[in-house]
Length: 301
Image 1: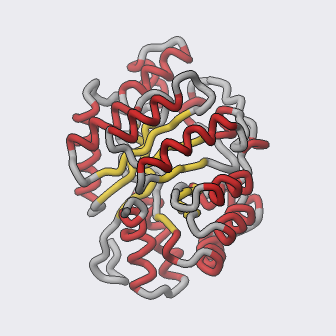
Image 2: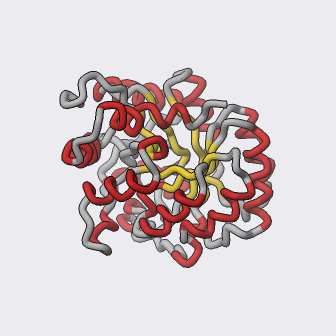
Image 3: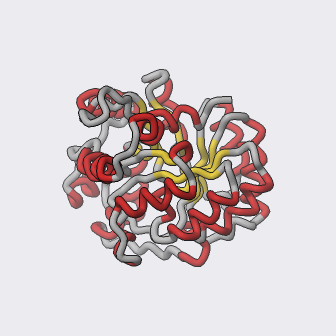
């Protein structure tokens, strides 16, 4: 895939693990069965056993020459699905999980997840409508910080969940809670923790770059089509150039935002992003870092 730069490993920092529980949850919310949910959106229903879905993803990544990927449990309470995936394919995946720190038992769930070897907790303050300054967020971060070589993923900026829209489900998100600068105090308070802001800040590029410039423990993930670029009239090549100028290559994490089958791994996003990197005429060392090396380094002690 990367003939311009030779043989380069690929590690995807942003893959949603849409388990059976994910679809069961949407079914409860929409008054449908999991099968009816996937029928409505034209997707495949995964096996009940997350180990089978892990094997499917491993084979899919093999087909595209992707060595590793971060799998995100994409509804709160689905940590066990990603834990199973990690156990099924040792060394192949990094395990992320969505958490609402306002929910009862959130701290205990994080403690269990860290003991089970998950790598990152994912916070969606705009989706769940809380401030990152809430003491309940700090309680969660204390646990993650104590686990060592872990990360905190914070979704900022605009957020749309296509499957909810297709099912006619409301998405009462509040973007007021989604400013990357709100993470500044946390990144300063926990300098050994790695913080990941996906989608270049999802429309708040300036703020994401300011945060990363101020805090060397903040990383940006490049995932998705980055349709927010239309807000500022940017093209992806320019976004990469600005990020490289401020952050450097060592804190950019390649990602696709892949999620469902039958589409599987979103090679179109890969091609779009590598074309932007090619247009910038970057060195092979820089591309290697972004595309394949930075993700596993994130979790080195």
